[in-house]
View: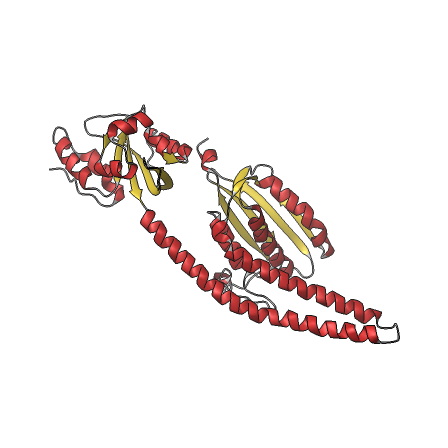
Length: 377
């Protein structure tokens, strides 16, 4: 007798493939009725010809009802689901993809979806098996864990910020006292000291402002609202703004590959924070000047941005700790910059990695996923 056991999601369609006729009907019906995943079989024309009880429960639709509406239209974004089914019709078994399923009652449910070609021993051609797994409980748990972790880190950062703020505040009060003394002096020879004190005050206020912005950026990560942005044009504007600032430090800023990047879902203000943090990191690594290069490239699934400097590089033992909160190797560092950069990129559904060679330079690589509409085009 054929092996109809299920070994996780990867063997649901294996059970469907292996059963010969005429035994398949009753055995498959029993197997499918017991699954915790929703399973449907689609013809090449998109008609659902099998629909297990869990699929009906997940969607709120019976088999006739789902064929009236169209199964693919129940998913957000529908283009991504169409793409998965097209791949399966072409004979490719795609990896699971997280989509949103719209229930008949209007409720939106996160589901992992996998589509596979159906190669039945009876010779059925052109059909696709769609497997839907409810991950709402998993997402809720993950969200709670992330929120708990973020709150814990925010608490630690609040304490660290309190400590960090004491130094610039002390310096500001000291310089204000010096200014007051100079203003009461009868001679006018204190102009140099007045200008120096004002410069220090401005520098320390800038540090306080930066600390506050880093903290607020982290606190607001759960509320990011991304919109389609031409990443190449965005980078061109950013580089045009930064070139003069970097030129004063004898750093040449280069932008490569921006024209072919296209659009990506972006929260512009927070992503600017990522670029600024990486730029500041590069500036500190090149005190004698050098070259900072932003290099864009595009694959079939993502956009990549490399931020490379020709600075002092990072010691191998420090690389694994770079994105850890409150970790810093700099005397006046806060340990927030790279940690925040990673959290912002992660909130965009992306990833950030680093490679570095001491005395030669460092490259940070940001990967941002392409919007589903572009993937299915």
